[in-house]
Length: 212
Image 1 (tube, rainbow, N blue to C red):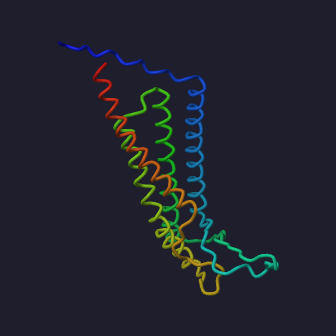
Image 2 (spheres, one colour):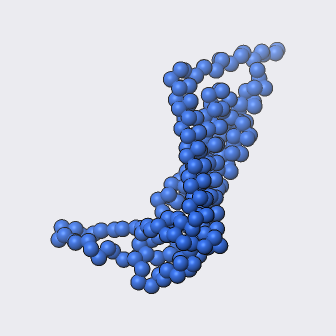
Image 3 (tube, rainbow, N blue to C red):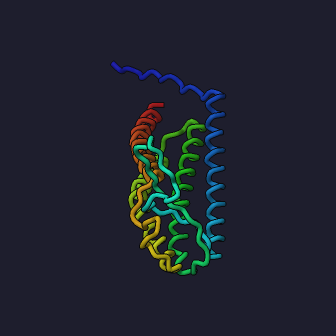
């Protein structure tokens, strides 16, 4: 006795509001990519002129801040400053570090643009999509811990070039895990979980396509 497989239910088409939402995501990712590229150009131009902005972990509280008897605890995290007159040799490591960080952010935007496009085309799963999510996850998780260490050396080269002493300064040049690094770590973990789900989805899609 041979039992014929009944055809599965046809996939429901995306609703108009869902398509508009996906187009909005693609527009947002595309705009973000353009903005990041413009930031890269601005960083290169400023760096070529020996000018940039640095952010360090704060070391001492501001002396001109008047405390209130009602304040029991206060925290401050960073110290930012603009510098100019940096030599090209000292600026190169810092600009390179910034460009690598921007390139990683662009890669994230491109992958999520690609994901939104595939969902819009109703073919979200695929090996390349999974590989892209795995790559973004690995780069984000690794970069979250490695980037602060590289930044210490890059900013240290600028301080040495300008002969800015850390002794008595209101900041230090040490490993500084910021909120942005934490965000990158969380995003990397999210993409890793997403990649696992897409790997399973890709396999199920191939099996489903084989029954059609």
